[in-house]
Every structure is written in structure tokens, then in C-alpha cells.
Image: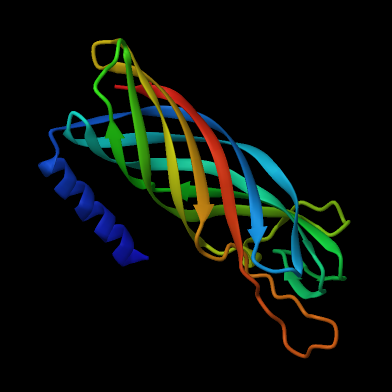
Length: 227
């Protein structure tokens, strides 16, 4: 993790030297997220509506091409129904034993450092159109959940991985408000690449537990100001 952060810092320094200009701003975004299991033993049981905000930064290599990054805080989550039992589901203050058919509602927050390439059109009227694609390293900030039918609000960091990697694709517009100030409107789809949970399930008749892959997906709409 330390090497990754150091690498990001050096990359930012290099990009600052090579780029023809740096633009930044602020944005706010409503987010719809859901968990997608890669197993017939786990099913999606609901999505989560949340919010995010962040600071976007573009390193512009030309009028039509940029490297886009920044830092963001995003609420993500969703509900999963487990066909098998969970012999040990750990919360901060207790450990639950969940029966087959239990539903767990995940409510998490992540700090994200998106890394993407961005292609932009020339300004048409007052509008610049763009497309972007890249990866999203995400670091868990908090994780809470309602466990089974208990209607709890437990800290479940022990069952959610501290690091998540996703890829994203999206696009939008930058509307000139005069000078270098622009209105940003962007739609973004994010698809998980790494396993989101640590939950170990136990199939009936089995003697060993198994952690089956589940990824986090989301769709967000960013609205903000660029300077």
C-alpha cells in the first residue's frame, strides 16, 4: 500500500511537469450502487442510494487530451442474500451466526483516487464534450451493516476488504461560464474488479467455509464547477 501511494505521488509530479496546464474543481454526485455476486449461492437483494463528493484534477497534455485524477469520498453498498449459513459474521462488538437465507445490508464509504484518460472535443458553442475511461483504487473508510433480520447498525469492517479496485467509463460536458470557469456534468459507470467482502459461508454438509467473490458496481451523476 505504501509503495502504491508513493507511486501516485511521483506520477502526479511527473504529470505536472509534462502537462500544458492543470485544471481542478469541486463536484457533488448522487450514486446508485449494488453488489454483484459471482456465485449461485449468493443473490443480490437490493441496491443503495448514496452520495459522493470530490476534487477532480485534469493534467492537460493538449487541447483535446488529458490525464484525469483527483480524490473523492463515496457512499457505496447494497444487500446480499446468502443461500448458505455464515458460521461467523464479525462485527466490532459481537459475532453473529447467520442461518441459510439471511440477508445482510452493506453500507460503506470509500476514499477513491480515480486514474483515467480523458478525450475532449473542441468547444462547440459554450460546450465541450468528453469521454473518459480508467481505474478506481478505493480505500475503505467505514463499513456498517444490518445483519440478518436483527435490524442492527453494526461496524462490520472485519467483513469488508480495506482495498477495492474497479474500472470506470463515462462521459459528459463542460459548459463555459466565462473565463476559465466551467460547469461540469458527468455520468460514470464503475465496475468492480476485486472481491468486496471477506464473508465465509458454509454449505450444508460441508466441513470447510468458502469466501465467494462479490464485486461492487455503481452509477453516479457528477455535477460541479471547474476552475
